[in-house]
Every structure is written in structure tokens, then in C-alpha cells.
Image 1: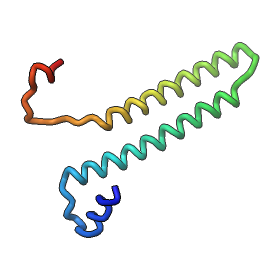
Image 2: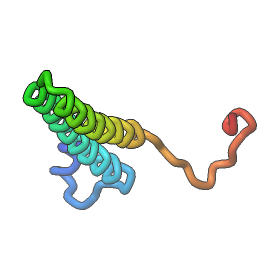
Image 3: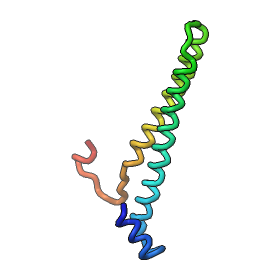
Image 4: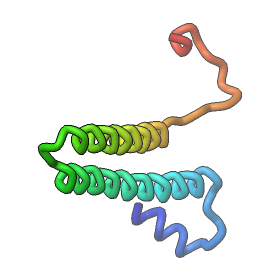
Length: 98
């Protein structure tokens, strides 16, 4: 990463497109990681606040926690997809289709 930053400082505007794309992906991944951490904190906070013996309250707590967990899982899926690479114009082999 330091080498990339040095290259950016040495040659402003001269980064190749792949390097620019890499930096944008890295920035997006950092943003998704921050969102993930915030969601985990929210779920933890809701769990602590809403623990109650009342059955009616427990149902609403379960619903809220379910929604948070779904949101958290979607953020995890986004982070996993961020590392995927799609190659265009490269012929696939039989092994590649499996």
C-alpha cells in the first residue's frame, strides 16, 4: 500500500486504470467494514437494551434482532463479493465452468 501511495505522490494522475480501480475497491471495502462494525454494535446494543421477561416484548425484540441480523448478513455478502474478479474476453475451459 505504501508503494502505491508513493507512486501516487510521485506521478499525480499517472496511475494506471487497474491501480485506480484497486484503490477504489480498497476504499469501498474500508467503508463496508465500518458499516459492518456499526451494525454489530447496533445489534449488541439492542440485545442489551431489550432483554425483558415480557413475552410481548420478547417477540418484538426477536423481530428487531432478525432484521438486524439480515442487514448484517447482507453487509457480509457485500464484503465477500467485493473481492470477486470478473474477466471479460477470456475463453472458459471445461474446468472453469465447473
